[in-house]
Length: 481
Image (tube, rainbow, N blue to C red; front, side, top):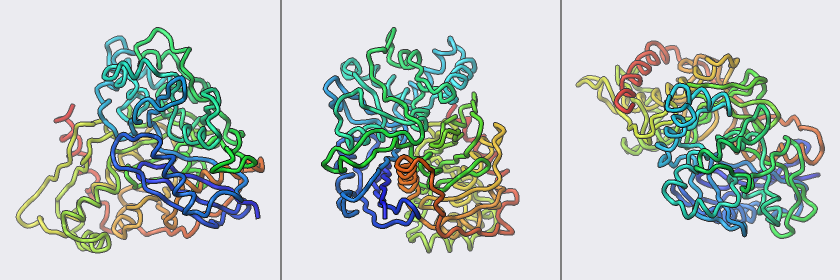
C-alpha cells in the first residue's frame, strides 16, 4: 500500500491525514491547535505541524505530501530567510483602509474605475483580507520592516519550503490557487503583476523581491528534508484551503461548495475565469487548472456559536430551539456581521437584530433567526457567483455548522438549489492528499466522498425570509458606507 499525506494548516489548527493513495482511505490522522489571533508568528505553524505529524504516527512511510493552507496570510522574509514580523492573517481587518486606498490609486482617484482596473488585472478587487492590502498597511505603519523584505510568501508556501529544507529563497514555490488570492497575480496569464506589488509597497520597482515560483497542479515542488519528511518523499505544490476543499470534495464545473467554518465560503468550480468589479466575488484559480470564483464572508459558524452561548445551550439543543421557532422567526431578522464583513465589504460593521416585538421575542425565534441569517448571508454569495454567469446546479455543504440539523433543514429552500451534506471530514487535508497522489503517480485519483446525504427542503423554510433579509441588510449597510 502506497501512502500519501495531506496537510491543512488552517486559521485554528493543523490537521494531517495519511491516506492510501489508491483508495483514498484514511489510514491515520493527527491534529494540533494554532494560537488565537489575527496575526501569528509562522514558526507556530511549523510547531503545530510537528505535533500533528507526531499525533498521526509520523511520516516515515509516506511517499508524497502536499500542504493546503489558509489563504492571504502575509509572510515576509528577510535576506537570510528569517520571518520579519508575525504574519497578518486573512481575518485581520486593519488593512481595510489600505484596500480602499489601492482601489482609488489604481483608478486615478475614481473608485469605480479602480475597481474595474483591479478586476481586469487580477480577477478580484482588493479587500482587507488580501495579501496586497496587508503589504500596503505594513509599508505605511512599519516602514522599517517593509524595507527589510527580501521575499514574500503565503502560509502554505512557507510550510512547503520548510518541509523541503528551506535551502534558499529561490526554492520558494506556490500554486495558482493560492497565488490568485494575493492581489498581485493574474491567473489567466499565470504571471505575477509586479507593477501592482510595487504600487502597494510604494516603490518604483520590486524586481529584487523574491516571489514563489508558481507550479502547475501536479508539478513536483521538491523532496523531504530528511527530518520531518523522508528525503525520498515527493512534495506537491500545495494549494489554498478553498481550492483544497474543492479538490477533496471532487467538485467539477457546475458544482459549488458552501463551507460554514470560521468564515463562510461559496466556491464554484468554473471552466472560465471571472472578473467582478463589484468586489463581491474573487476571481481565484482552483487546484486543477480551472478557476474557483469565490465569495467569502468573515462570519461563519461562529454566528451559531455565539448565539448558542448567549442562549445557554449546546449545539444540539440550539438546533432543536431553531427548528421549534416560527417560519421566518416570526419576523425576527438577524444580520450576522459580528466581526465586520467581507461580502459585502463592510469591515467595520456589527451584527444587528430587527423586527423585534413583544410576541416574537422568544428563545426559539432568536435561535431560528441566527440560522436563517447565516444561510441568507451565504445565499448572497451564491447569487453573486451565479450573477457572473457561473453555473450552479447544486451545493455540497461542509464545515462545522453544516452538522446542525437546523442548518441542514433550512438551507435547501434558502439557497434555492439541491444541497448535499458529505460526512464531516477534513476536506482541505483530503484535497492536499489527493494532490500528493496526483504528483506521485501522474494521474488524479477518483476518490469517493464519504457519507453524502441530501436533506429535503423544509416546506416553510424560504418564503419571504430571503427577501426580508436582503432588504434589511441593504438598509443596515448604508450606515457603514
